[in-house]
Length: 265
Image 1 (tube, rainbow, N blue to C red):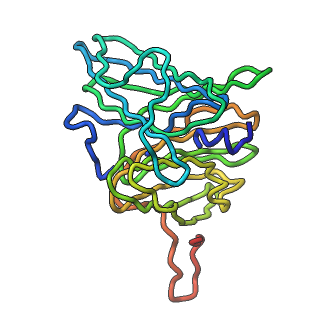
Image 2: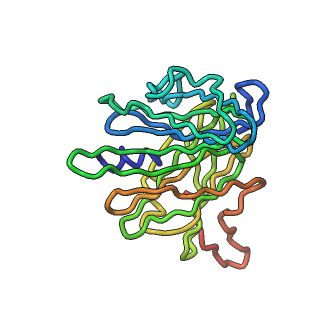
């Protein structure tokens, strides 16, 4: 599988309670099935009472929007109103047998105390399977992502806008050697999902390590990151949910002729 396809794994709110009122609404910002990939969603009820969980899936249409998706799951035929016993775990595996890859995301509406994470499995004939994980997450208007694009490593991102309004997302970078750059993603449509390799979308950071900041002035977003090493093995790259105005901006040139160290592109 090509790197771009694989890292599409890594190739997320004005809050909209699409399930009605609930104790918590989380996002699984990337779900894949087919084309050599399988997803496993692991639900855990950490509370002393029974927990109710609903998952609603959305798949990419290829036009910047999503559509309702019912990925085939080995354990259940419906993910609506699933009941979990106190102190229990539930594993939900997609079939992973389709020839064509389908990508998307999932909304998780659950009682308090229910947590989740997803396992991505890549089946490569003649090789050991590769696996990586990412948690189900909430949302914020500003998200920080440490990244590494040096020595053959790459960081990949999946972002979801699970709201009813389109959002513009600015992206700022500060590398460990002081480069500052500010750009933006294309408008992320309502309920849309996008996944990409960070340095392919923003070539200015190629070969660098640093911090990326994703910011929306109009609502909240949700996100996961995955770090790939030169052998194509991968693991979760933690993202940090913040709020308020962005921290990374391009320094302004001072009137005396001094220049800033960054630029906008």
